[in-house]
Image (cartoon, rainbow, N blue to C red):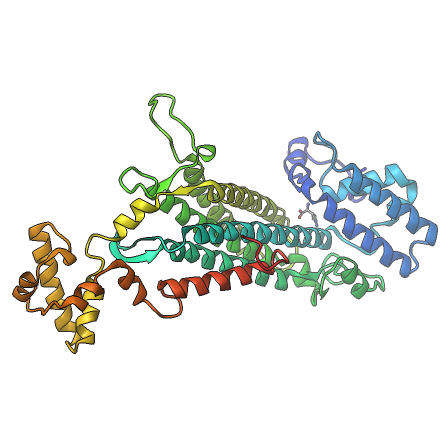
Length: 464
Ligand code: ARG
């Protein structure tokens, strides 16, 4: 039975009718539709619309609908998930099922279902991100004091600890978690009781409905509550940041797994071969993560564009906001899962990284810093060490291989301490500030990261 046929003298065009349905995709909202319907039924009983037996029969049938789940095959006569639950309720509980829609509207239902869906996805993605971040923490611990080059402009810049590099990603992921939790705070108000647009016509206890569904409070304005999709946009934008970070990570690992870099050994479980070239091991997992990121940005854009022209309050355009949310959530969960598996199995060539960290004049800044400590103004020290580097380039050697006489030519008095200052260990140690790569600082940062992550696992050292 249709939900709205009385006013019409003829049915809709068959093609239009099928085309406007949302049940093929909003079926994923069934658990939330059932929960919201149960809360509404209880409020109806309190308001005297359902008697005790009717409430019990309604709740029993709604639970059964929840257990059954949606039918495997699409049902072309069903318009949307709200229609499905009401239809099935009448099948299971009889005529009492026709009372459930008293004092409510699908406009508030979809706004509620979608909020519940997003809330659950936020919790799920947060859990997945915490696991992913833990994989970085474990790798950072395994790397010990191994060093690698850090790049600026993709040119060797300064040596850093491998652990320091890993912890850079942990910071990004912690911000992603924070953005999701911020979004969760704002979305957690309950539209139920808003009716179609002006508020329900029954004296329903909105506080009780909100509490039953674990919302913080009822939404404050019925027009806003039934037409707001900020929470959906914010969620997908927060997911865009996750996708962006995953994509940068994937790109860097692709690069570092090339023979030219040779820092990363691709795990076979996350690589594929070539049908043509027998020698190939390709970083498909990473490439697909990089590729899928673009789709998540597209969903965020689709939502903003879809919303920007909508006058208050509900418009059917809002039905189109569902799929971008579902799609982005699924894409990102899949990406984070695969990325976590990858990080748990990937191996690093620490020897090669350490070698790369020890050459290419990455001690030049430390050399200049030494001269500064001896009283040379920095600009002058920069110039002098620059000359020394030029000499090294001519002689194809490193700064520590220039002789004392070579340094005299550059205007530098290179004593034993100067040469000591060029050693990798010393170069790392002088970055001794909070957030710097000096080993003691990195150990501190690692501990802080573990503590921050432990709140998502309930144990202090979840990642060791
Ligand atoms: N399937 C619809 C949606 O997703 C439910 C709300 C329909 N409301 C209406 N007034 N036609 O938006």
